[in-house]
Image (cartoon, rainbow, N blue to C red; front, side, top):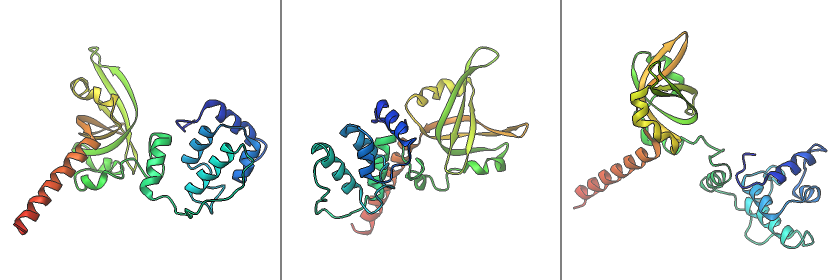
Length: 235
């Protein structure tokens, strides 16, 4: 269900057929299912056949799938001469993003964290900072809009970084300023005060921004600084 381009009828067929036993090879999968090429390629790009054909690369698996469907299952099982080159980490992450909308092999924050080293705290350490204002990175998991006793909108958020899940609250003033950001951004940098009530820790959000946008700006500034340094060293 998580694979974006996989049709519902394909999901149903696979699950039903698997009740009779696990698939043990790509050929076994071909024999027991009747999917179309697009569904089979969606499964391949999501890495679903990697465990069935451990000795073959993604390219080789994709080629076998294409041959099977384009030759109506009657072609030979001959692999081309492009070898068994494995996907690079970047290629694997790209396919995962296309398939699921998010990476599976690494935490979504991972590519951006080095840019914020020393500037953000970890979710697992939140209890150390009660009463203090800190910065955190987070992937948005859920939101819930509510209202104050004066009927002003506020919002509760659940986020996670690579160490833990944590809860946040945006009171009306912050909600008015940053609430719309949550409609299109999932990777966030937040600044807020750590509160604790009955053993539950929450972050009262004061400021919030797009981690990707802030990271790109940081990267550009560092690149410009490095260019200036190089210019001073080699005028």
